Length: 239
Image (cartoon, rainbow, N blue to C red; front, side, top):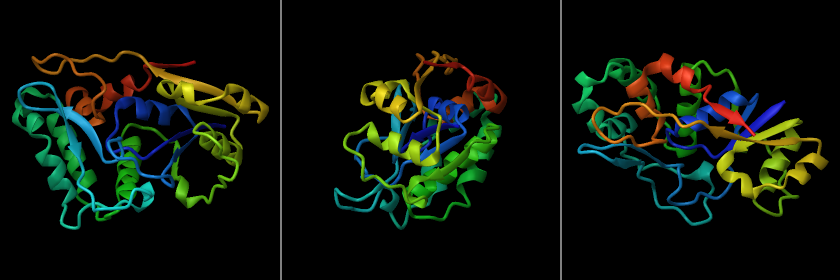
């Protein structure tokens, strides 16, 4: 059984969904400390005039020790309206985007029903619904719902090892960017193979602007549509 683990990111890049599709169980690691300036409350999209900008979800004040699962968005934030305001580039250029209506309607139908004020719950819904939209059948759940025991965690790479052991995994796959955090021998001793997913370079036309790689899945869908994005999910190698 293959396992992948990532924090619940906000509309993450396509490599996140490549990882979800490469495993049998995908754990949203939400019972650890929230770190500012990460990807849990923000991601990148194109902006008018070229280049990219962050969509950053405004949050309530919280202590430094607050776990991801307990982070809340502002009470008066209407999520659908907030996201759409930050998609001005795509809306302005909608006549030049062949997949605009398809993607815009999907995002609207996805966001409008979300009423939770907990960021991790919002992200979990988004991740599950986009996975379903892209034909990914992987089982997805939040770590905070399973009562994992972390007593043996001594360093960063141990979190994934302990969760994988408790799930009965035979293989753990992590994004290639985190390779230095892990000790392959530790996994081997536990009977778990450790591998890393490396996305291939994915380049597509972003109108007349210089290509900005690894933006939010929102950008990929607006320019490529559902079916082409599904094909792009296969463009990776496991090392």
